[in-house]
Image 1: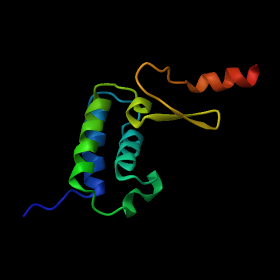
Image 2: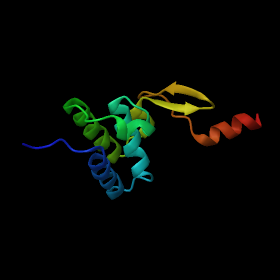
Image 3: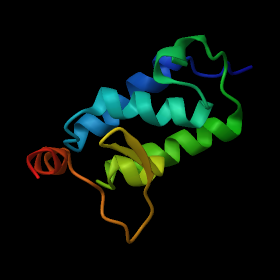
Length: 106
């Protein structure tokens, strides 16, 4: 009987995939994508237990979207900006960190 992959194994495979295509932060992206699919915070990831098959399938699909260079914020459906959590969907501009600096200057 095949055992389900561990959290560490899932992250290693995802990180390798993202690194191979040149994603700037493969480990951080893999952590965020898996935490989202498991419904936990990143710091709770290794305490979450075994993911169900649906979560695994969704995580693998998310990793492939990211490997195709889709913005992480779009995959996650949200982004932080100036202390707020903003919903992101196709057709919406994703705020950049430099924009916060411009707001401070204004």
